Image (cartoon, rainbow, N blue to C red; front, side):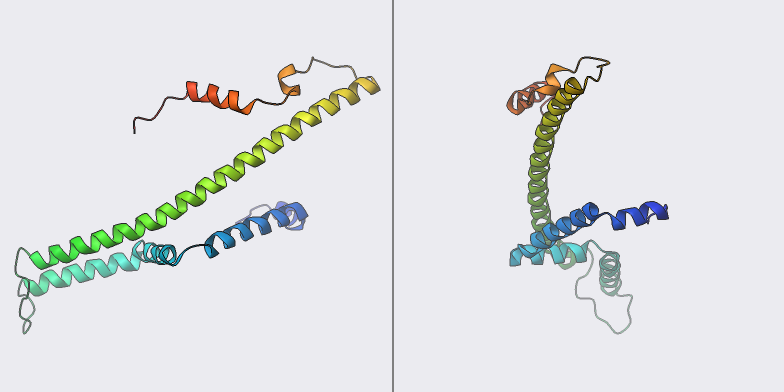
Length: 179
């Protein structure tokens, strides 16, 4: 929740912010709409099994199973006596399917995050190129109107960044993961 009402009003009235919010919402809507049936099922299952009601259901179900099969409920004959082999089988099968649903959902989210990272990289590269051009223009304008320079602009900032060279440099400086 926004604490500064003036800032909140400014943001609501800013057409750039409104456009950006609309674009992001559209991208999210499109990503959700592009999911396959299996991904939709996986996402729904992950949403359900990752909820507090599902945890409560599991606790009640397993507790009830154990209480019944310990013979603690009068009139109900135990069907899976201790050590509850059938409960272990049901639990193992449930764990397999729940894991698969979560992995399906996580894989989709990882692919979506990778697409966002690529988009973010493209936008950053465009911004870097635009900034370099702006610095060149500002330097020429300053020269033309005779604005004294307090310090000489860095030649590195006035030329386009060699992305491949920079990526190679980063690659040599960051340790590789052991995985």
